[in-house]
Length: 110
Image (cartoon, rainbow, N blue to C red; front, top):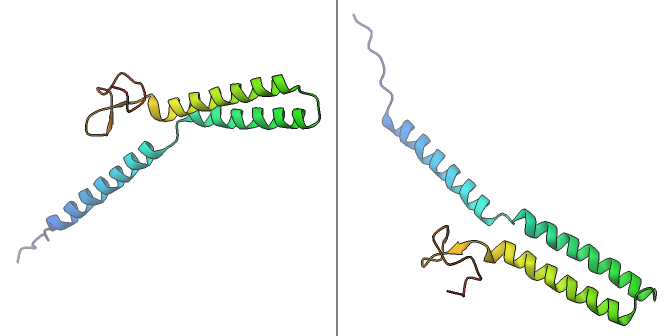
C-alpha cells in the first residue's frame, strides 16, 4: 500500500496571516500614538528651566522682570513643543495624518 501524505488545511495559513496582520496593525497604531522625541525633550527641558527659575525667584536671586521673561520663554518652548507634536504633520480631509495634507500649520488652518 502506498503511504498518503497528510494535507495541511488552509485554515492554519489563514490564521497565521490574520495574526501577522493584527500584529502589524498594533505596531502601526503604537507608532502613531508615540510622542515625538523632539517635543518630549522640549517639554522636559522647559519643565526643568521653569523649575530652576522658580527656585531662583523664590530665593530672591531673580528679579520680577527676569522672572517674567523666563515665564515667557517657557511659554514659547511649550508652544514650540506642541507644534512639533501636533502641528508639524499635514492633516488631510479624512483627519488622518499624511504627507499630502495642509501646509504643515495647525490642523484648523487651511
